[in-house]
Length: 211
Image 1: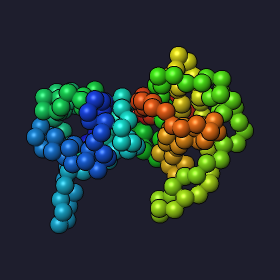
Image 2 (image 1 turned 180 degrees about the vertical axis):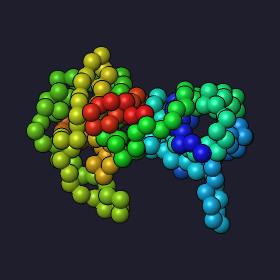
Image 3 (image 1 turned 45 degrees about the horizontal axis):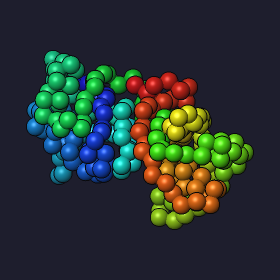
């Protein structure tokens, strides 16, 4: 049995599919493609899958990752990708499959591209230059606490109405770009404006592509 890491893109209408529904979609896709995956044991048996970092609803993902266990040692990874793409929707495109190298605990950052129709670049740079950015964040227990998100922003660069952010990810300090933008709108005292978000990469602590 092999631990296999599958890389794929999530675009178009599929960006509106929640993480929970994505689990169901992927399970059905694997079954339809007849991928020889390992099933969990016990009463509620299901195909083992582990998504590296769940993608927020409404976000496009260009470097999405799901781990599975393949029971057939003769089943090639290139065949796996071909079989999945043959039954997948056009908005979910499988890129490659490899043997797992890094542990998911090594995930430290994620890169996002935020595209605006128009943004005040000067004000945004002023906001991002602050030594401390305090904002309210929901806790896993449903509460709200004030946190300083400035240390969680590894990189921020604005160019041609496109903001590139590298944010803390994969742990309890996971920072969503929507929280950054909410803090920015509050900082400016303006109503939120529309923007598109694409997650382009997942990194380890050394800013190496997670693989």
